[in-house]
Length: 419
Ligand code: PA5
Image (cartoon, rainbow, N blue to C red; front, side, top):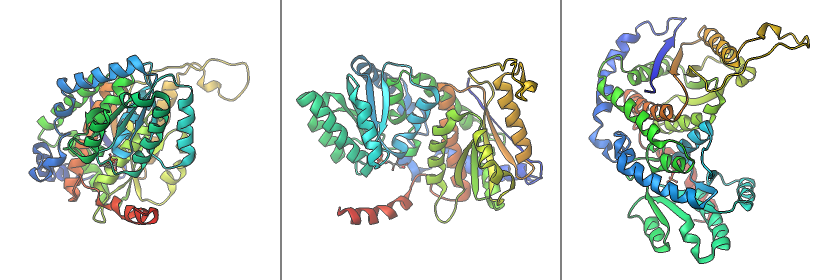
């Protein structure tokens, strides 16, 4: 089983009454375990089997097998919650099938569009999956147009058979897709984008990439069982949510997700959206940011150790990395002989331990340990953070599932663009 362990290092004694605070927050855990009636239309993720149960997994795998048989490339069009989870796993574990995933529809940059188009030139057979909850989002909407042009040029009338859309059922766009003869996958109507990792949004592209989506579902289901069955102060989601919200109440305004494994870069983007969009409202919320160490110790490390005391860190630590490389003896007197015979694993671990020690002299450091980074671990992490985010929002008293703030710039943009 892929488990997550939560702990913290509190050298300066901020958490002196931590256990009391956790106990006080137990009702917020209870609410999250039960799932509230008022959020019924957003809780489709709460029970993993709803969108990642056997029946669904078979559907995703069957369509994925078809794509693998025919294509050497799948263009996944989507933005925000419609792309981040799948991309996090794809970039963290790398694809394992003959199909390369190309990500589009997450930017309006003409240079990026042109890069996507050039990368398609040498592809033998292209398929596309356009993912959008409301097919009104500008970025995926116009990217889909551009890719349709490419497909029409190549496959003429048959282009529709290369198209999958993941849209909300019974909407205008769903009906349009049916009329055009596209392949259809449902976007869960009971889940908002950033909570869709364990649904067709996160799982289907990964099945095409040859990743083990059953292991992901298993990791998530195990985490669901663990969190929902532990109604006590030892519940790790409650402990993490309490620690971060306590630090917020103590004046911290930034939570840095820090990791010594750069494979977490895209995962951190998913995490930032989850917490930023869920918690950042009503003039409240921690700003979620990330640092990729050891690289960022040579840039932001100065600020973290010595700058404005606005932040604290949550370390995402992998106990056993996949690879290992031992540094050999060398006849060049380069000053690094003290590392002869040491494994990069141990050197990285030493840098991690030292950073934890140094940073915890400034603020409490929260730690999430996972044994190894694989599909099961990703499933477990996705569920853990989604659930912990729900608990955190209950503690701070905000709606975890809306995002009204993102509409403001859209009104101005649509006016400029003449919508
Ligand atoms: O969490 C959310 O619901 C949003 O961030 C969406 O994921 C994002 O805006 C993309 O929306 P859509 O899938 O409708 O294009």
